Image (cartoon, rainbow, N blue to C red; front, top):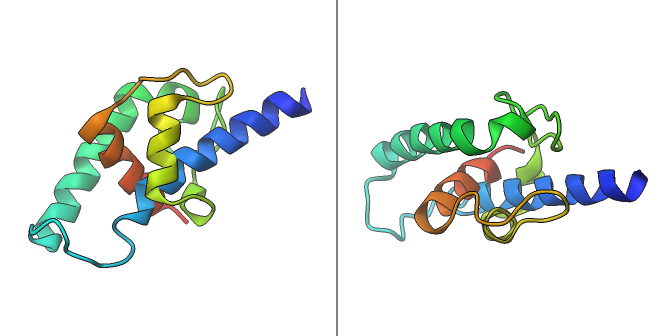
Length: 113
C-alpha cells in the first residue's frame, strides 16, 4: 500500500513540476505577449485539467484517487510534469494528454508551489 501511494505521489509531483517550470522564469522565449499569454494558458490549462485530470486529482488539485497536486511545482519542473502526463506513472495511464495540451497543463501545474 505504501509503495502504491508513493508511486502515485511521485506521479503527481512529476506532472505538476512540468507545468510550472516554464513560466516561473519570466522568460518570453516564445515571442508572445506574456501578460495575455499567461491568462489564456491558465484558462486553457484549467479546462484541460478539469476534463482529463480532475476526476482523480480533484478540481481544486487536492487529490482523491490520485495524489494532491497543490504544490507539485515545488518538487517538479514543467518538463518533468509533462513527461509524467504523457508517459503515465504508477496507476496513472499514459496519453491522457499529449503535445501542446500536455505542455499547457504541465506549465500551469508547475506554477503551483
